[in-house]
Length: 155
View 1 (tube, rainbow, N blue to C red):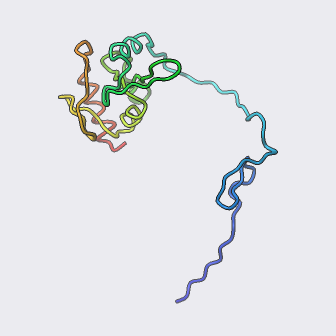
View 2 (view 1 turned 90 degrees about the vertical axis):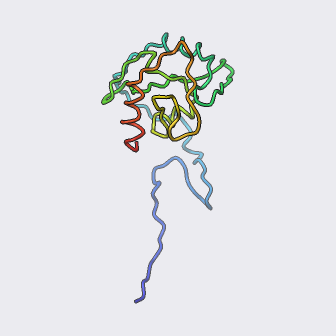
View 3 (view 1 turned 135 degrees about the vertical axis):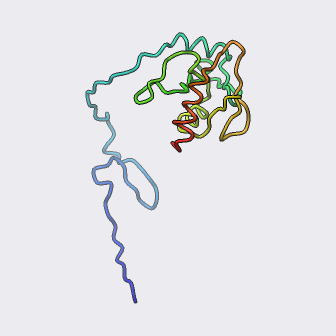
């Protein structure tokens, strides 16, 4: 049997503001200008920013996993990560016992099931142990929820 193929270029990017030539991506100069805008309406969960800020201060803006802090021109940066997510369908509470202080990399990995935390605070899916300040009581039910719905679920 002989199989024959004809290769032809398809213009997948018609109407796009860029072009690809010789494997190089570049803007079309005539397309500079303001991007299009669409009016939308969003329903947001109102978070307790005071609780998050107090927890960040307790940890001196250091990640509870890698113990690093990120210095920016605006000061130190760390993220408040909910163990049981606030939004639907998880409906976790916005309380200190449901929040971890994580660097952006560990926050993303935690949210998408890259690692989780055991009841003994050992990390699962990553080497190490979660640092927990003596004044920060973590909710064991939130950790169990994360293991069942984020890590074990293969999220």
